[in-house]
Image: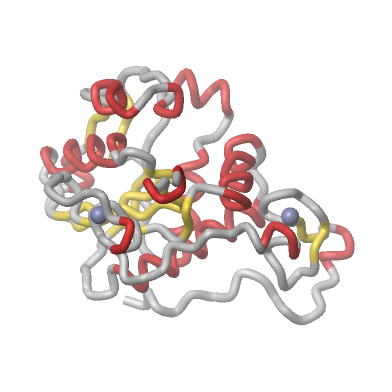
Length: 242
Ligand SMILES: [Zn+2]
Ligand SMILES: [Zn+2]
């Protein structure tokens, strides 16, 4: 497997196409040099998750608050915290299918997967699905685009049909911690013919309580999936509220 060989996302040399399609800051859309991802002001406000991390919550070990909890997934890792410039960028991921912004987050997720799961076997990538009526309304599922591009970077097969959402659920962000687990209970279905015996990388944009990832991992495991490793672009952390 050639998981460690990630092609560069952006050329640092002169790129004529950038005259017509300039690069924009991931967070504030300001035009920036082709070699950058953020403008200088937003770059100051990017919060990376620094190793060593707790692979249950994806948080830095110093901030881990998941002791004693058990999850159906076998790991969770993220390049960023959901705050500041990254949070502003991820909000836009849901509104605009901007290629550069998706590539930036997918490359960051792929780099984190290569760092945190390098000793794990990964057979394929799948995403957290969206309910069909919501997908029609929104036109695309940001989790699917992110997962597809992460799979491309990792040179792994992408299985968009491994998980389906069979009932609508209220947006997790609209509920408090207590209700999130119940909100996603029984709304996902996994296709055993696609995932039986596989070690899956489950990709999503944001992890807050982990309820969604946990429910998806549970269904994948019930369908015969061997391992589920989660990778998200950003996580929330108790330390952000301090
Ligand atoms: Zn900016
Ligand atoms: Zn933890």
